[in-house]
Amino acid sequence: MSLHKEQNLISTLRNNKNLQIIQVITTNQNFEKRFNGSISHFFRSLKNGLYSYQGVSNREYFKGISGVYFSLEDRELFEIIIVNDTSYKTLNKIQVITRLKKLLGFDIQVNLGIFDEYEPRIREMIGIKQRTQTFGDYYIKNKRL
Image (cartoon, rainbow, N blue to C red; front, side):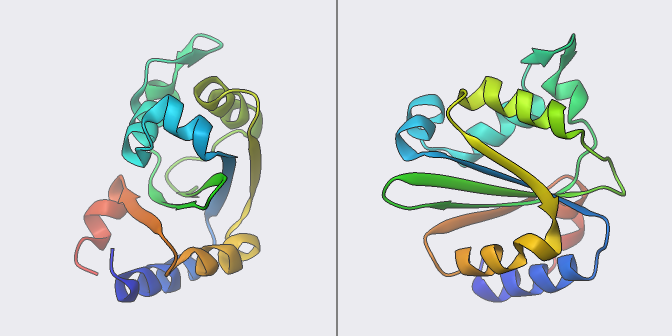
């Protein structure tokens, strides 16, 4: 996604008060080992995988979520910020943390919050080697940005 499109996307996000942020930090080595360094493979496993918790698969639990994710890798760490629009679906903190730890192992850091708290970090990520991808209805609506 181009810098201009990312800046437009951030402006759109800033105007939406129904956003939930999930920040995941792990090591590059861990992410490479588990997902061959592919953010799309990770996200497919998270959103559509058959991994389950309390008898509910990720596919069923994350069905209907919509938003955007940003990722950033540096020498040691891999960071993903998932922006979920809660007007589509609100996610439970314990469920999210448990499901992420099943995918990435226990040696990860997971933080949840609101967009205003994480906007400065997202802005830092823009322009650095990172990937941004919309998903769900956000992909369809923002395709023209």
